[in-house]
Image: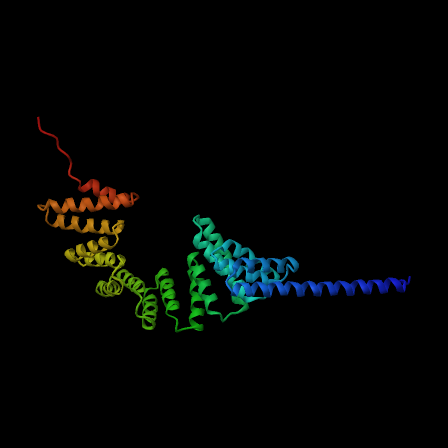
Length: 338
């Protein structure tokens, strides 16, 4: 059966008109996208989002417009709307690296803001899947490898965290943070010597890292290398005089070395910087009570120890072992004899 020529001609005309309409629609969408980008550059987020919304209404598959909207939402701190925009951008163009990276970053931010553990793990899991896609698209991107490593670390998958942190290190060995991250990952796997080497490599690139010195000192403590730990904590105290944490750690070190007076001073300094540290009160109480045990005629030491422990328990009542020590060393009240 032959199709009449007139029908063929009509069909061709319809197809041509359809292609023409599609071309016009795409052109209109691009114009709104460009206008949105210009408004964004001028700092007018409201008009920018309006133009980008019109662009994706005309052409829902315009991934760059979805991504641009995601950038604005993320800059405004609205990570949920950013997530929605980036997801649509990734669906529109599964081979675009930047929207995948930004989506992974947004999932990380959502995980950081979430309070429920299940939500945190859910967002981190989505971040991992997205970053894996991004690192497949661009294996040599430093930030993607580093962020993927951080997500795996938070999920407790230390072997994978090490893998991608090592990849990031290979891309940029001059970044101090990648060395410090690798040190923390090693530490969590009880690879203490490897952790120390990584911390030292980071400090060689950036000496002003008091938090990293605390990590280094803590690792030395785990090895019972207390003098080296004291040196690291002391350097951290000098670099950041306002931080109570290294003083707490110094107190613990001096106590282990039976330098009780120095331990007392360190814990008191920590409490002068952070009066809500239950650990510092607990440690100070241990120092006082140990000194009392060595000199049981000095009952004031016992009272000072009990007072510090009470303060610690007021800040954190969930210390059952400390409650037992308080009961053990609290003198029993004796009423008047008849």
